[in-house]
Amino acid sequence: MMPRMRARLVPWGVLLFSLLATRAAAEADFHDVFPQGARAIPYFPTAAASAPRAAASVRAAAPAPAAAMSTSAGTSSDSPALGFTYSSSVVAQLAGSAAVIGAGFLLNDTVHPGGGEDTAVDKIGEIVGSPVTLGGGTVLFWLHGSATHDEDVKQNAKQMALALATSYATIGVLKLTIHEERPDKSNNQSFPSGHAAGSFAVASVLDREYGGATGWIAYGMATFISATRIYGNHHELRDVVAGAVIGHFYGWLFTR
Image (cartoon, rainbow, N blue to C red; front, side, top):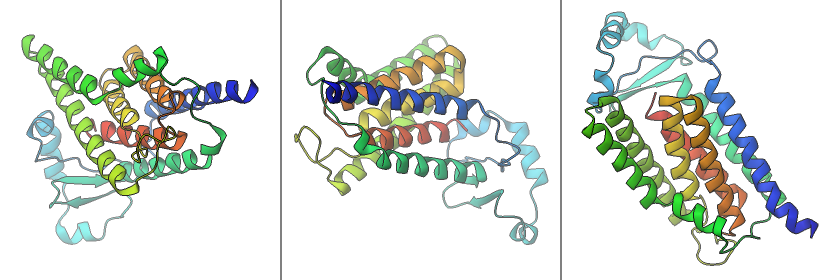
């Protein structure tokens, strides 16, 4: 009984800790440690149009090409071919993401999937975290903004759509490349978890745009969905940790 009970409780404890750590990181102010570089996303006009005066001040303060070559690599570096500016905050996010995924691999054997196959909890997590549900919710979010003429809501819906699309694209490539077998032996597309990626992508956008109770509820639901994927014997711990990190990163990226 004890191993089975531990298999049920440990995923919830680990993912609850991940939720609290994510919220703490989101609320922390790293601007003094990682100075922000200029942000310019010309390929996304709606994002650039939201701060025309800031863009003008960036252009006015831009260094000459020779001076730019001598600036510290720790602040920012432009990538005109991609249409946006890399900053040290992006590097910090990528480094943190890699560290969390590594921790997921290290802790993987401490959590044993299963124990809740085909239960109501398993089915709820599968349905709520599916691409159809999250994508449909994003469309409804945009329709609400359109009906109420709320440009901020429409912009948030676009951010969620971009975060979901890039998350699912990344997950798809990794699944087809790695070929990890699921714990339930149903197929070899276990790593990473698409449900975790999609739910954390949406949660990240909602938290950064609305914060407060909305953020807690969004991350709580994402954590619940991720835990059910382990409880339902669909994924290992490392699968959901990697998926959650990927989704969170893209949600953060498109709301910078």
